[in-house]
Image 1: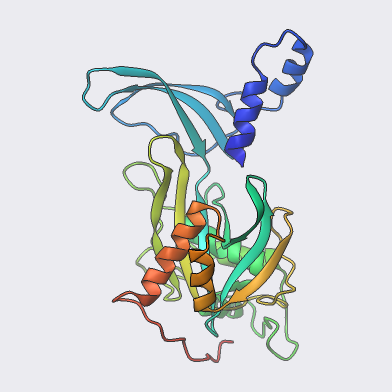
Image 2: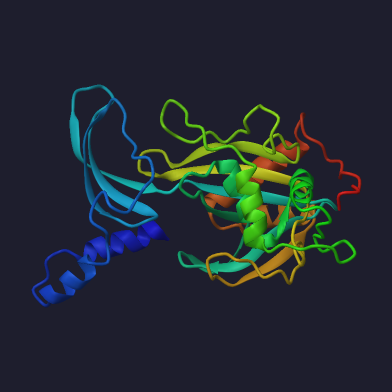
Length: 304
């Protein structure tokens, strides 16, 4: 969506004999290069130069000058699209159902099914972003996270108890963030998706990292961090229900609970209409049903 909007705005900036004033108004919609987009700018040993055509907080359109792989040619019109790194999360409840949305998206015709997802905030690790997104959109999280909240707020009631103390999403999100480690970067300057191997909230058996993936191999498009959350339970009152009112980006969303067979049917029918969604679901199913996975639904926990 951001890339399409950005390219349309850039196209509208081309000289037009009809209205130079319109061009000036359109141009003001994009930030000055280097002032808005805060993500890592991609370059490697083949990159000679980068010219920014336009940017927003979430995306940036560049032209790279690149040496060909054999070193014999220089390509000076290599269009490259940066986007803030994002997370997709496949959520499976303690009872074994998968939670997805039925919704509309600007660049998709008609309705589509989708998993939980969103951008990684500046200074946030991919795993922390994933935890924040499932909390904001569904009001759920892991059993380990609920224990952390109850350690912070004794007597806390997540909506399944007998009317103890409650917190809103912002307060719970703040507890999660403060209990998490800052992001770690690899030798390319990109965030690492795996949990840090020290005894912290990040060591959580219900959170499975499925990998980091480039969206478009030659044109960028940002990086996707895919996760599976198993045994998801409510973290706030009303969480984990079809009537939960998420705090997302203002898009209307219908929450659906699907069994594994229904998920596989929807995947096979192409009802998850973005390739990143389809890939993350496929990875989750491989984890659950592969040689190292488990088809067994976890027993009901006292943390529920």
